[in-house]
Image (cartoon, rainbow, N blue to C red; front, side, top):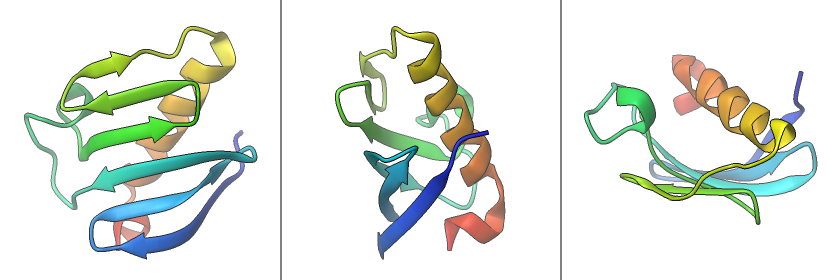
Length: 83
């Protein structure tokens, strides 16, 4: 399981680290057609690993990178983590 730390919240933006790697995520409380897999994360940047901005600009290529994307999506499905 990944270690996720949100260090700053700026509106819907969540800024932090996952396993020590920086990420930014734009997260809504409700799912959206623009979210990853129709979910509530509409933008996601993981430093050097993945970038999603209403579509994939850079997909995670490694098993570890793909796991990070999945962990962040799962983390932000919890409404408490979206505030």
